[in-house]
Image (cartoon, rainbow, N blue to C red; front, side, top):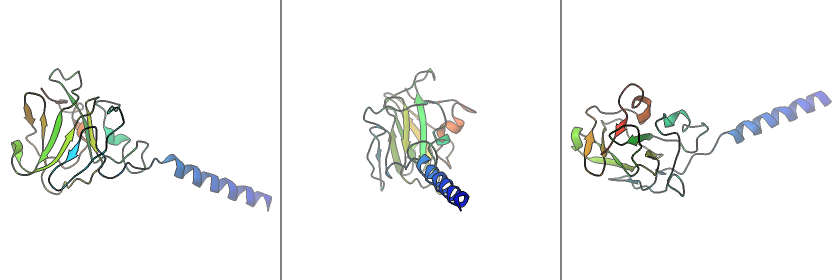
Length: 166
């Protein structure tokens, strides 16, 4: 009987430990610093009080997924650099349009935080084509292909150039 009681207590401890290891997601609609939804998507919040984040250039979704170790489940995330592609670009704006080269409807707008990272936890509809545009202080760069997922650093900086602004 003592063995069964100890086994049950150990099993309960494992379940409690497993549940406490998973961080709870950020509020739906939580975005990187100074971000906002557009069109039908209003959002707020910030990544931190300082507007700074971490792991620039890495695939944010390696941690920020349901049940993952990162706080919040990101639906779109990445890092913007300056044209040297070595220094991050805080304050860059990432826009998602329904048409190429800034045509169609502007569906979502995100602003890079103090580390050059942008992210959102709001629901993003990838069933229709979304075409990214990255706006800096003087230029806007358009991605010619549509995206079907929001893991921007899954390709950029790995198999294609880093995302950059000017």
